[in-house]
Length: 514
Image 1 (cartoon, rainbow, N blue to C red):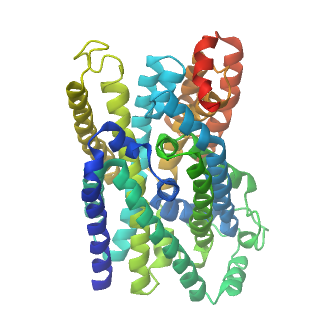
Image 2 (cartoon, one colour):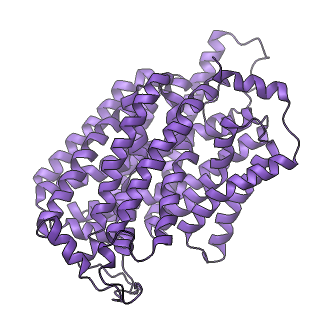
């Protein structure tokens, strides 16, 4: 216990120290939200990876999908690395950096408003982002607190509150630069932590070959805790594609393609220094994802070698599977695991709250770029007034960080469902609404304003209706459908609706010719 407490205190002191160190760079809006658009490839790549993988993945997804699909769940991690990291950087990195800088966009809703010449799109996008980032944040809290409860014996409620306060402190102090620097430190811990834990779990089960043999011997038709898979499928949990390849594909799509439509992920490309940094960041981010995501799901694949935790409803408590695997490890390793999940979760929480507060401030409260709150006439803004307004925006963002954390905290204290379902609802609505119009808007001049509205309605509508009628489509599969379906929606509606002025569109796309 002394080792666990000591390591955790050192970790938290470092996080707050980085916030204090970065506070001078967080005095302006660009400094607070984007780190002055001068964040290097290593910090950006690690910020991308650590925002991607949190306790939702390590505790929630690795446990639930490792149990359902066995070792084949490792494909989810591979998909995250190839599609969610490599492809995301290749398709979005350079174009996002150049176009957002060219049109002076600081957030994803700001991009929609400026690129498609609609303040309405900007406002609605900011509301969608704020509302649907909350369940994801609640899922992160729940995941980290489940593990803290196992590692320290601290009640879940106390864990949630402590994490919320500490995350708020360093984000409020240092903004994006503090978040990126802390992400780098946290990413190093995650890399070492996941490798150490995998080795320990395999050694605990007699080595890799023995562990796989044990997994192959698990009967596939055992209805444990209300969860069962098809009978007569011997060795299915140690097979290449597991008992349900199509269900597995849905999870790969949701967790991999979704990153390209999430504001907190795409925002990392706004702040990177230049095009050469994007090339280096692509490699770093992909390697990071292979190790962390692949390792998490590979680890979860051995979940059936441990006794499952049965909840009050008689079904398996999926969020307790990974903690149940880890509780048998030596204390030093448990301390490392706690730091691993703490690192993953605090980086994701920081990214989520910063995205939400900046979106609400810049796209709702101060959405009129020209009048800047109506205090001065256009063209008459002097440096003193501009600096005053900049400072006020930063103050409002800091206040909204506290507000956002408080709301998600309330949900986390009374979580409605499993972590994976919370993330499915959040990612499905956000990426279902944003992915297609954002990506196509970077490449295709023919995307219309009406098609963006249609995709917003499609992504949010499908997710919400499915939730209201009791989730007849699994939230994870529903999220995957929402994302993929957005592309034909944008394409078809764009063919049938009025185009934006060609002169304006050509001016926007000039950024790629420089």
